[in-house]
Image (tube, rainbow, N blue to C red; front, side, top):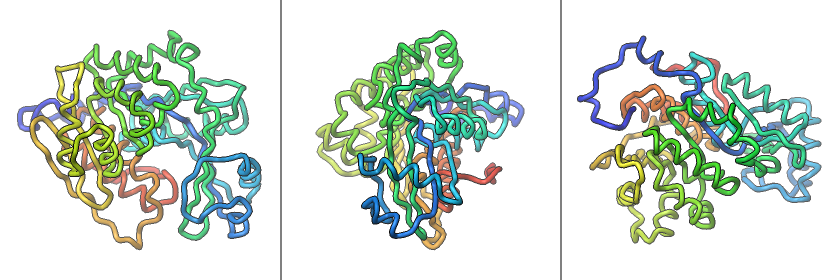
Length: 363
């Protein structure tokens, strides 16, 4: 598996070998599936629902009608969304063939939006196995577009209802966990099903597979610290951005705001599987990505992009992780994983939402 030894010691993989490495169901993601609903709106629409032009909020009661009104707009775009599902989609896009390298678990409702989510996941060539229940509707994220601005309103709904005993523990589903080599879960899922995360993390650790986690948001590091720290001992690759890293450091009493120092200290936290050392990956927007690998800290400059070409930075983090995972699952060396991550983020920020062209232009 990548990240275990320096590139010089590892034999180069031929193209045939690389293709064989990307097995179906090799990448497993579990998280909050949301149907992203995008439409162009006017200022009156924003004012009606007390929305700022460029913002991210969780839906309240006053936003209930917003979703119905949005889908009646003439040009509505639907995309399978949610942080983890986005990253799995990006990884699959970069790998291209075979289809279904990426598997995704999460909870949806038995409704129209759930059907659209299933269709969109299929179009992205990921194997989505949803736990379907009828107590809550499918989670949605409304993207209300005015000019270059996007006001995001997320209604988690069914995504919050994932149940380990009703889905993950089922024999046919657990077989997909056993098939996977690389696992990825965004920190957002720590608010939903800690027991599911621990079950998968322990499986990965016991079988010397690679388990990856994202800090995801400052509030996860602060208010779900106990859940987070139960999972950290099983984490082989930890992702985060600079804001999340600083918050994590503060909550862990690292007594530093230096990103490189934080990466080093996060790497040194207790780890169950001692066969592979933890890798810590912190992005810093337009600044270089910081990675703690083995006993050294490395920095990788990002691909520069003109500010006039930036359309939407919201999906950049998910895209970065997806690119990195595409390299991991193909057992590529670290520098390739980072290049793929930077490439994916660079593509996504030039487009609205976490969307991408049909084929990647990356080697």
